[in-house]
Length: 364
Ligand code: PEP
Ligand code: MN
Image (cartoon, rainbow, N blue to C red; front, side):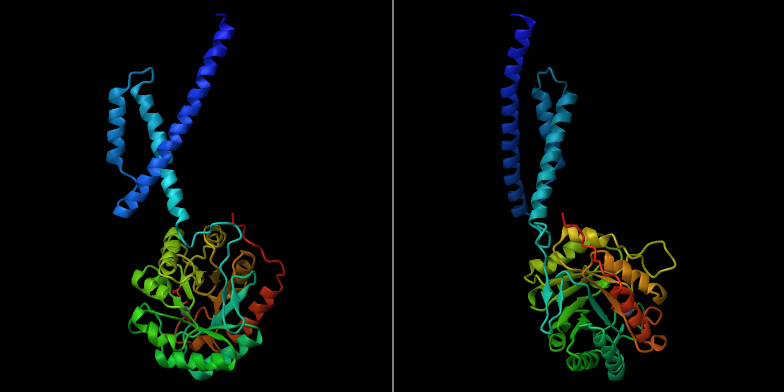
């Protein structure tokens, strides 16, 4: 046979072999997927290095060439790696807070007309802690004047030192409820422990999980079992993956009304209390279908850069920002350095309102 014809003949033999290999690879992947499901039932992990090593040894023992054992090892290692990726892809699809398509957006509606996560930029504001009726009333009047519909009504404060002001407790919640009713606002308040949920439920419209409690699985599960929306703050040392899984605890327990809040992470930067991780906004938008709010107070820990951070939040694609506002920050019982007074709050609102274009984070 002429070499040219022989080449063609041999190539004809290769083509169907490629198809056979393709079919076998996918057949193998389908079975591996089933193995993954069984492993999940058994509570074991997908990745089993011993099993991989055993398969490679067996393949090398029966290998007759012409491929060397080294090449066989490389080829099959690649197949094992692809299978592991498939398992990870399957696992991600099962995560409830994970965005499944670009148009999937969770939005949260409240009785007073406030909607978070519906293409608007909402402001959550109020003092760090409820201190008195007068303090709350003065702040609420100023906030509602600027259209703010959700007020911080913090009765319990997670303080670094047990000797610092811990909040007014239930008394603070009563004040917050009273004031919120007067100005047609909704109250959100931090829940420090699951035992407080039934009592707090009498006063609040939404529960708030602080950074220190982001990974408190018992609290998250308990909040997943009640019906009110939950705002979940990112822990100051938490990766985005950990943050997403914390939200998953709430959603997988039955509550899909979740708002995420980026509040800054700990870095080597000394000038701010934390470092605002603004890239978390577009990344969380890509990964999840949940609304995201930017905390411009605890991230910086100082009021002099509140306005630029507010503008950054506005254009980041976030669904809103959170800022602490106090009638007289210098005498505040907590977080005195970062709270805005009423004039500063109005300036912040003017600044944010002057930005007409809101960047919409791509979600694919
Ligand atoms: C808060 O926002 O009230 C608060 C205590 O912040 P963090 O949990 O982020 O420290
Ligand atoms: Mn505070």
